[in-house]
Figure 1 (cartoon, rainbow, N blue to C red):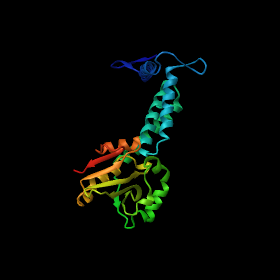
Figure 2: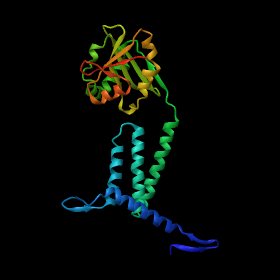
Figure 3: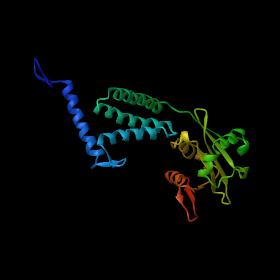
Figure 4: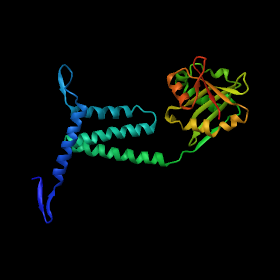
Length: 254
């Protein structure tokens, strides 16, 4: 029976509540994940519930491809939430319990990430491009750098200024710039952040906290080449504007 007699009248039992919740969720899944009949594998029909399960699998698979730990946790948690609902709907207690626990674990670590304060440092090595740490950083990420900054050649940077950014005492990025014929402008030759730290915090450290060091030199404009779409998007997010020269972007320092 779905009801029982209480002293104060009729009470709805937990099984009846769960049954109603399952029915509502099943209706949602079938309405949103099965828009008509989807046929795969030589005519085999896939139900809306199966699509919902594959959606959760896709989220978990995508999360494991993230190099940024915060993104990994967020996407993995969304996948676990889907699987928790999926396990509940198909009466699979192990799936429900395991993924419910994964959701809680992800929430715990995300809370730790957002509540902890990272220590940021920026140093300018006296040896510039020839500094051992700079060379080691460039060698470590040479392949990734060459994909984004196709014009960059470390051998031509002997007269360039170099900034290394650190997060919790770990090298996270490198910023290399040169003077130009115009004393009021600088050319950014390399603005690279390792994949694990691409959350714009390095950019904030350089373009907000340390721009004063550049302004004190009488510089009013920064220039940068944006040859790849991913770097063009990054430059635009910082306020760089396109110029009449192909791939050349410029930022007025305020």
